[in-house]
Amino acid sequence: MPVAFLVMACIAIAQFCMQYGPSSGTIGTYIHATSILIQRHAWVVLGSATLFWLLTFCGVFHERQSNASRKEKGWLMDILDRLTNRQVLEQKIAKEPEAVFIDTEQLAVSLKSKVIGQDAVCDDIAAQVRRRLALKQRGKPVGVFMLAGPPGTGKTYLAKRLAIELSRKLLHFDMTQFSSGGHGATQLFGSSKGYVGSDSYGKLTGSLRDTPDAVVLLDEFEKAHSEVHKNFLTAWNDGFITEASDGKQISTTGSIFMLTTNAATDSLQSLSITYANNSDELRRAATNALREAGFAPEVLNRIDRILVFKPLSGLDIARVTALEIEGMIQSYGLGIAEKGIAPEVLLDMMRNQEKRGAGASSRDLVRAVEESIADTLIEAKQKGHVRVSLVSFNGAVIARAEE
Image 1 (cartoon, rainbow, N blue to C red):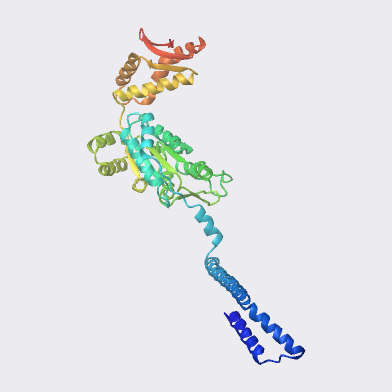
Image 2 (cartoon, rainbow, N blue to C red):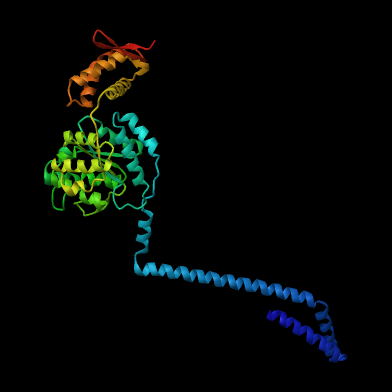
């Protein structure tokens, strides 16, 4: 607006000069001509001046806003730089675990199709994993699950299938190999400086360093030394384990720990029947049974879920047998015909399994399948068969080419 005022003042002066200024002489002629020019183009001059002022004002306003924004951002960044290590903070934020959402029903169905006779366990583990993966900030492993029950009921196999379904690497440790306290711990967690083996990482710490989101299977956990058990407490409670060779903390917040045990089998079977519809009470009773079997209370307190497996019986034996037969046929490079296993074959194997008594496991069943059909499958392969069916003939199993 100061420019507009100046233009109006010039117009007023020009009007005054035309009326009262000198009209003769060189100076008077110039004044008269200038006054006429200003009057004729006054509105053009006024509009141009106003437009120039608006553009100038907007530019100044934008620059002031930008400066204010820069000052505000600079003030915030100065706070972070002054009070903490901003670069490290940004790196830690980038490493924060992302929430993962999975389909519980689909996972449960996939597990139940492979882990026969343990539908309740498969449903439970699928729900537990889904809830824990959906947590963005945990500070602990995704889950620590103990799979308890008789041998050969699918505990180890469930852990393997879970790793496959979640597309995670499986880290499998046979805990019977770590039955001595000091040596077992150094094998898993590394050796302190100055001791043999301190130039390399432990089996567990090294594996988790390379694949922090693995499924860690600790098979027959009760066979490991109690000192080895205690080394897992920080892994399950604080979200890291310490490598002894260099003191580095290895994160466990992305891992899933699966422990299997054959301890307190009889007690757990009885409890699983008594508290079949009360999971909380089953967990309490199972915890007490495992404590009596020798597990330390501090170890049991850090386990998220105790899942009790039941013995195979009835058609579940037939299902496991059928799956094992199918897998063995495929391992010989053969295909199996539609409805290619005669019911008599499965029935005979079921009866033989029942004769082995309550102590029989799926491993006994696998060995029986191999002894029954391996030779006939080799012969079928040598004859050039592509797809076969199995029938019972004079007490033996025969592989026939698909018709």
